Length: 335
Ligand code: KG4
Ligand code: ZN
Image 1 (cartoon, rainbow, N blue to C red):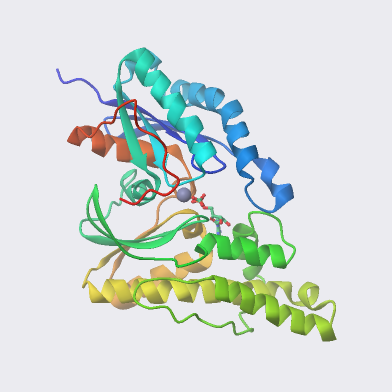
Image 2 (image 1 turned 90 degrees about the vertical axis):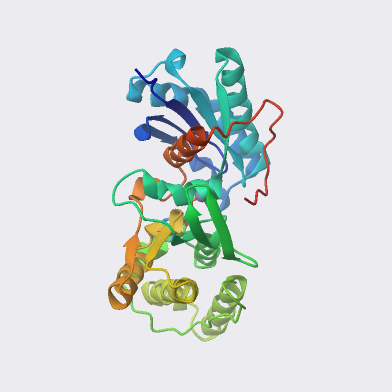
């Protein structure tokens, strides 16, 4: 009888502490503790994040094991996010995983967070077939990847300044919305129309830029407020719809270019911003128009979660790709 492959995975790269158990490639649990403390600051405060991870990690891991009906002694390996992310946050997950691996004498697997966002597509059916193009869009990253195999990905383009989620959040802050503003802008967009024209940046190849859009929105609002101090209040839904429309068109135009240039018809999106209703609709419409098969993960696997780390770790386990106790977290981690 072959032995079950049972992996406990930990994600702590930003402000969510998450743990997941995967058994023979099937996710059994995915527990997440978010951190509300950052809302008051309009962004993630690294020091607060790492301290909250320290408080959350034991209860979250306990719950993930309990939900999966698994005990520590059953584990074949323990996986963790090595990076990219906030160093203090990563350090909590990395140290915790190393300690468990050492005490149970089991294998240790390090996982790249971006690669994991892409492999979230393999948690549930329908699963993309290789090669496919995946655009990862979140608060910390925006990339277009050519995915040749589970652990073989090539970065075609990335943002040269802010990430797409960061653009949503920073523009939301200008508009006086809460943090994270992405879901709020998404909701308000449904009540408005994209009547304001914001500029599309000129960036070469498959790269993105979002900082110009933020400045464009700020200047536009400053000008309008001079003649009407209530401009934001009176036009909030239309401003949100216009911002969302522009961010979606920037993302979709680059994605289309990559898909056409590489003559690929399997197209996926991943990361927190893939929860955006405008982006989901635009991707589905482009898929219908151009004959692509499109893939969007379930909402719980779009934002940061340990199930995607567990899925990636399962692929790495099958390849015998393990790491040692000397492994350190990396705030920047290219694969
Ligand atoms: O993947 P994620 O949970 O964390 C990072 O790795 O960054 O993504 C969080 C980002 C935030 O910037 C948030 O505003 C954005 O995803 N986001 C959205 C939506 N839901 C989350 N942006 C636009 N529309 C949404 N519905
Ligand atoms: Zn992420």
